[in-house]
Image 1 (cartoon, rainbow over the protein chains, first blue to last red):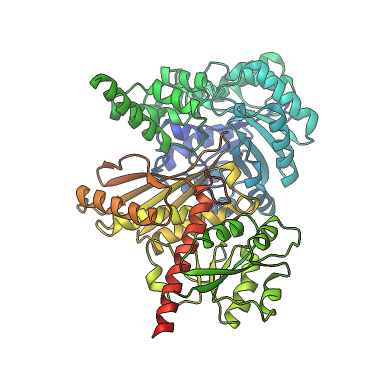
Image 2 (cartoon, rainbow over the protein chains, first blue to last red; image 1 turned 90 degrees about the vertical axis):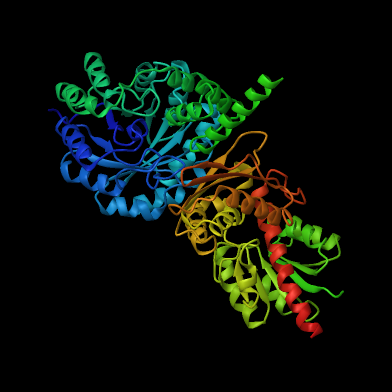
Length: 342
Length: 295
């Protein structure tokens, strides 16, 4: 296997995929998946609660297993791959970052809403101090104009981020919009540019290819699409497509396909598809982890989950505001009963 | 009725909003606003309203024999507070610390002020703490809370550079105070910034898990409503957004805090609840000082 790579892939199934399985990962599952990813030569593997370190909560869902145990397990079987962690300032703190670094995590991805980079300097600086590689992860990217994105990416760079990501958390961006964003970042910052997509509009692969074409060299994928909503760019498919296009990922295609089929598929209660809920996320521009919460709230209040998601999109709700889902569902149910009475 | 003299240390947004609120108090008399920037808008306003506008910091205030105060609000920064706390203690002046320094005990205006009337320095926790801890306490006083978690969502515009640079202080301090003051066995806090235009009002969600077998829906509802009224007595824009939701042993409470719009905009309920709580606590101190004086 060649060490030469044109793009560096970060596998996010053990973090973003945590949303899709209600944060139920076990140590055994993480060991199996990480070992296979390591064997397939995937450079980075992200392990955390779906909402990042310390995300285990009533707001987002309680983790079945303490994420630190999962990180420790992943590190123990990754002799080639580096383990990454996600941290959202406002949820996780320097305390958890240090704990993860002590367990052997080598990359810290500090995630903020696309307009709020200035909550990240402390965490990026501390990750550096801990000897970690750092990423500024600008989420819900579609909610800010390109000029604002550039300003925020420059802030991330100034704090010491080694890479700045365009994160399409809602899977809302169209290929031309991704092109414009990656191009603007390549022209304005000196550090690596990355792209993280969601497949809610079936555009994750197209968007990723456009991002690569424009010079993004850090790419996220989730094997078997195991990520929030309809999942991310499907890693094993991306490896195959890149191989056909002559883009070196350094990842073993057959091993990734085997991992997807034999290890990851059996983890899923239902296959990762573009359901009406995930399609609505991409259509309305809503944070992908809202999908399952909206589905549960819809059942509880007897309303259509799509109405909840569309309303959340209208209210410009940002990532992490899961508490709005139940509230909006309750409101819709109340209004509906009023109409019926009238 | 005589009033207790107070001064505001810090001439930024919080200090200036405090100044407006103190102008309405029947128990407190504002004497001075203390800053370090002679050009500050807050000091200019203070002078216009007839208060002393000191631009030489706490040392300037303490060395001026014409200026006095029994209570000082510290609306500077955690770092500055360490020094301010020391010199104010030496001067025998009570301090209401609005910074995250937490030299003194955590006080939530609606919950535990009576326990700390004898202290010379008390800390106001965080905006999220002032908004949500009353509800944690409201549940806990009728059904023991095993775990409480709060999510505070505020408008991006209402989070200043200090809050942003030290966002961990918010989560850590609030988590700790949820258990120390709210009474939950364990606490957790989450903060979210939302940049929507027009700016959103502060909203807080409080999740509590009560001890197995201790759920008493009617008693909890009543306690929540009573507590909401207590907070409304000093923060009129504090309200329950919708009915609490009961599921098994979980109670979820949805709150909204609209500011009074004194100096700060109405959406900044997070800042308003801090200044309102500060005034409320100072008035409790003042009542005690005035009673002592008459005895």
